[in-house]
Length: 164
Image (cartoon, rainbow, N blue to C red; front, side, top):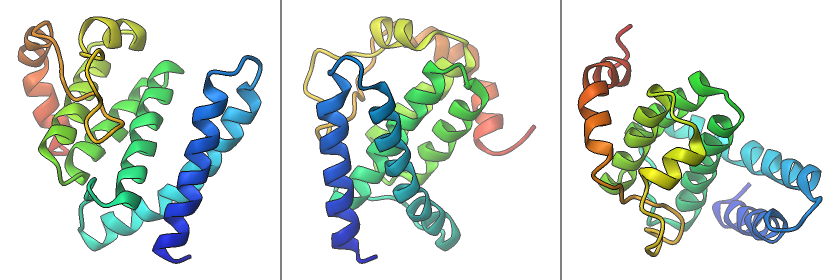
């Protein structure tokens, strides 16, 4: 599929997802659309990894791919799939060519390592009352994150670099 077609497909899917998320009783439909989004973005992610390239979130298609992975991390975290959520966050911290988004994924990974429930993390650690960065990403965090960063720094560095 051509880049423009992929971009339009993801725009359409995210548009549907955004409309359904706030609709009661649409959980099955939301899950189905999110599954389609993941099926569309995973090959793009895999191709980037194979080529040793990084995602450019100022490119519209790659921004949508990054958004999908961001939402995937949050979905996994919320579902209690902590190990997988952490791994995806760690991968994305090195796969996106944007310091703000890299840091955001790194801090999400640290929140997951700390075992903090996602709702509490969003409420107490993320600053969500500002405009999202590049329309989708909350990249600002409260000072409350600093002790977590300090506590999990070594573990994060080991896991981020692939050491056991």
